[in-house]
Length: 231
Image (tube, rainbow, N blue to C red; front, side, top):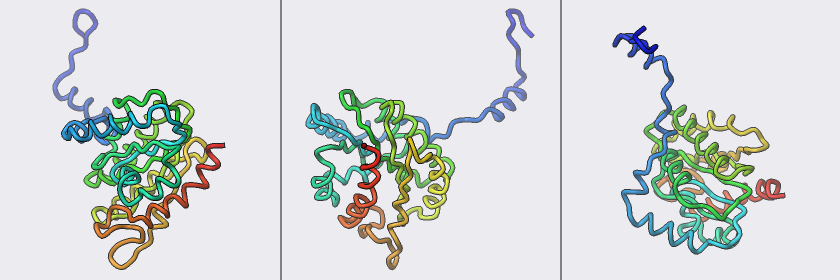
């Protein structure tokens, strides 16, 4: 021990301690890369959130392009009919779990107190291991709960896609136990997207994004859960 109570660690001991200390998964560390590298995203959110200010928001949808395309893509008709007057679409194309985390922490969502969050995230973490993806999804759930105290969560299974089918299926097995059936409810939407030829029901030709049928399938599975959680 050195003067002042400091302890000197040899390089070998310091390295051993560093190895022994669990390091957080990169999937759980907020990252602003996707948002900052595209100035259009920043204007996009400012404009959209400005339009929603002062309007009721009982539900917030959090995710990547699959969520974002509720509003302007193949999901538009379903969104307008079922969710537009009561929900906020907080999806951004290309987001990984860590990038969704950054937006939750840094984009101004004051003024809204949604009762339910619908979270579908993780498909863009295709280069990560299933455990890391599940850790990132859990971080998004926890951050959402902190951002909106008392909110209930519908945690949606990652949908099948041609880029990383097996990885996402394994990640879903780890994501499912994150739900307790009360504060967090698991929606196994992937089970509805059954194989069709070399793709899956409800997916576009890119074998990743949803068709209008896919969004109708999502809405049909989601509505009964929302009805119960919004009571």
